[in-house]
Image 1 (cartoon, rainbow, N blue to C red):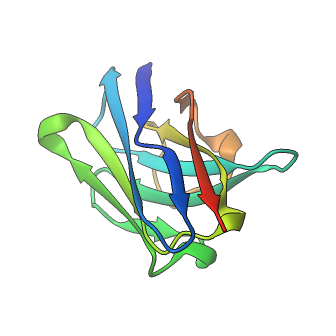
Image 2: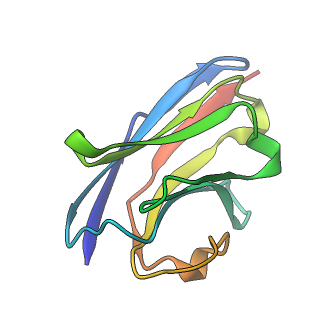
Length: 126
């Protein structure tokens, strides 16, 4: 099992930027996927972005393409999510997730990820 700890959330004005980090430890892997999801109050947990650990391919929800960037820092065992041009409707708890045994296509379904962080709050004011 891998342990995930998110950081970097906070309060930002609309149009602003934040950088989220997910530090992972434990039974890590060079394959599978790391992803970010977000959940607003009263709503489902939605896919934001994912990174293939073996091929470095990246995936994004349509709503964040061109504004968010996912990356990995191997030296620090972190997966980062750069959030630019933030919108008030993107206020949510952002979660890091891992599916280290997954092969093949990326999944955008939360149920396909077996390790989760505690989440970090992102609040975007208008």
